[in-house]
Length: 163
Image (cartoon, rainbow, N blue to C red; front, side, top):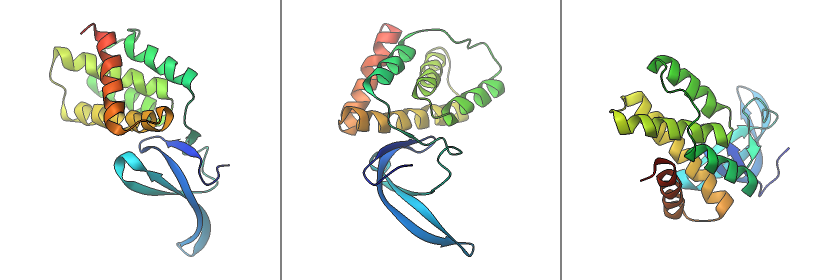
């Protein structure tokens, strides 16, 4: 499905580049694995070939999808008045979906909540991780460094919050 050099997105880990496809033995079974380098986390991930759909792997987004993500960051359309435990489950599903727009909504909503009250540890961690994963894709899509991706995200968020 993917080839060496493809820029892909792996939910919960972020965006990276397929640097190789190697055969590895695991539990006595030989399988092919994608070797994905995630530059923003300075990490390599081995992904079993054949599990692309199950893991919701996808190519990085194009500029149209990036605009849709930007709109999601700056509009207010989700209900924040749910119990924190339910909200956590819903947000985790959005992140795991691999959809950049859904991930942007999680970042937007948690940021809005944090402006009115202190986030709990789980929500803080979720916000930080979601931002890092989104930034990893911004780095790849916009071909910019991590600092510029942070600045871009901050600027878009300021538009949405009128700050």
